[in-house]
Length: 302
Length: 120
Image (cartoon, rainbow over all chains, first blue to last red; front, side):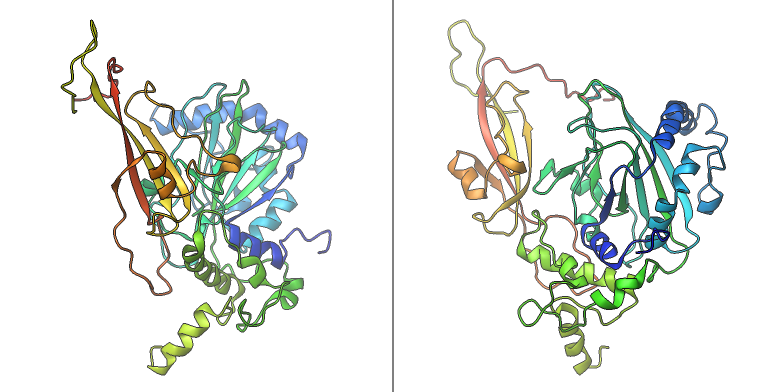
C-alpha cells in the first residue's frame, strides 16, 4: 500500500465484513487528543443541555446530512480528527466518497459511574439490505482495563435483533471490553452489538462517537491493489477445494457465541455483504449461495 | 409472592420464598449443548446464595444446561421450536435457544423491597 494511500486493503475490508469492526490503536496524534480533552466537557454540557431543552447546541454543531468535509471547520479538534488522512482513508474505504454527518455525541463516564447500558445495536429501525453506516469511537486518552471501555461483541453486526432482546444478554462468550492507548479509534458497522459500561476507576472516561452515512454505493472504495489476488471464485469450499489466502478465509470465522448452525446463517450474511461491497454477485464461501441459486434456476426463480 | 407456612424460628419472622433466576442461551435446543450467553437475576437482594461464578476467560458459569441442572437449578422454561432454512436475505436475529432456570431460596429476613414503582 503506498504510504500516501490511507485507504484499507482488501484483506482489511474483509476483516471488517467478518467482524463488524476495525481497531486502530493510537491513530490520533497526542496534540489532537489533548485539544479534544480541553473542550469535551463544555461540548458535553452544551449538547446535553440542548437535548433536554435547556440551551443551544455548540455553535459549530453540524446538522444531519451535512457533508463530512464541511463539518467542524478549523480549529475544531473534531474537525482535525475527521480530517486526519488516516481517518479520511478509513471512511472513504467503507462509505465511499462524499459521506454525510448523521449525529455525534460525547460519552462521558465519571469516576465511580455505576450504571451500564444493556447490550444493543444502534439500529432499532433498520433495513434488510446490505448498505451500512459506520460509527467512529474515538478514545482521546488511555483507557485501562475495567475503566469504562465499551463492551462489544464481534460478529454480531449481520444480525437483525431488536435491542430490547439483546438487552437480556448480560454476558456473551466472546465479549470484548475496550481498553487501549490514547487516540485509539474503533470503527463499527452500525449493527454491531455494544454497551457502555460502568467506570469503577478513579478517572474520567471520555469518548467521542460520530455516525456517518454513505451517499454513493459502497462498492470497491478501498485500495484494491490486492483485490485480484485475494478475491476467490465461487468454488472455494472448505469441504472440497479451498484457499487459505482468500477473502473467503477471512469471512470463514466462527465467533465463540455462534455455534455451528448460527455460524452458517451469519456466514451467509457476510457473503451477502461482501457481494455488495465487492460488486461481485457470484462471490461465495463454501458454496452456500451458489448451490441454492443454481437449484432455484431450475424452476425459473432466478 | 409466595410465603411459606412453616413455623418461624424462635423469636424470628416466618420464612418467605424468593427466586434466583438464571438464563442460559445454548447453541441448540438440546440441553446438553454449549452455553454462549447468560444472565442472572436475584430476588433475594443479594442475601441468598452467591450467583454462579463465570468460568475462566469469559466462559459461562455452566458449560451446558445439563451442568446447571446438575448443580441444582430447576428448569422453568424452554425455547419454542425453531424452523430451519430461512431463505437467504432473511438475516438472523436474536439468540434463539434461551433456557430459564430458578433456584428457590427461603429467607427469614428478606430485604425491604425497593422495587415499588414511584409513579404508581
